[in-house]
Amino acid sequence: MHEDWLIDGPPNAHWTLILAHGAGQGMGSDFMAFFAQHLGAAGLRVIRFEFPYMAASSRDGRRRAPDRAPVLLDSWRSAIARTRETGVPLQRLVIGGKSLGGRIAGLVAEEAGAAGLVCLGYPFHPPGKPAQLRTAHLETLRVPTLICQGSRDPFGSALEVGDYGLSASIQLAWIPDGDHSFKPRARSGRTLQQNLQEAAEHILQLLGQLPS
Image (cartoon, rainbow, N blue to C red):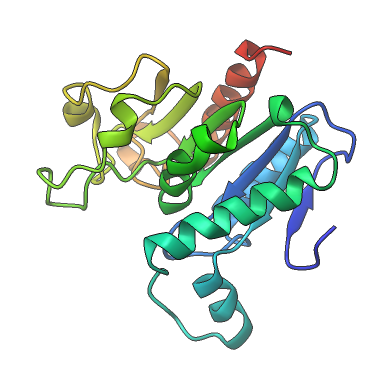
């Protein structure tokens, strides 16, 4: 495969899931590693890649702002093309990611012909700016989509998202008391591990609903 990718799960898996990272942490973060390893152990082939700005940060340790949208979009298109070159059919390919990675995946999912879309903590709006919505493409999205969202996520909480008029192709899975990375408060009685595992189970359930 490609030396700048991380791959988990069997090479002959029925489903391949490409995951992109969020704005602040790369493909090797604990969050990304959990989903790659957990889903890989469940039989999925999970591919992680980094956007150019994060790949540069990984090389030299300097923190950078995310690339502009055209670069992010082209990075996703390239990741899909590279995966397809290994023989993965579109009907077995699901794409997505954490926050920024999932949002950009949603912008290319239909044009790419992906079988499904998974967003782990969707940035519906910047924290504290609920009027600046990033939902236009979610209103008409036709790709079967799962958004796992912490119920108190500052980028879009359970109290807000119900009013957004999202496409019927989108399933929302609320992660109990979770923040943007699904971490609950101690007083909730939940643990981060429980919330991460619950989100992973929702992903497996989505795949079970897709045509096989």
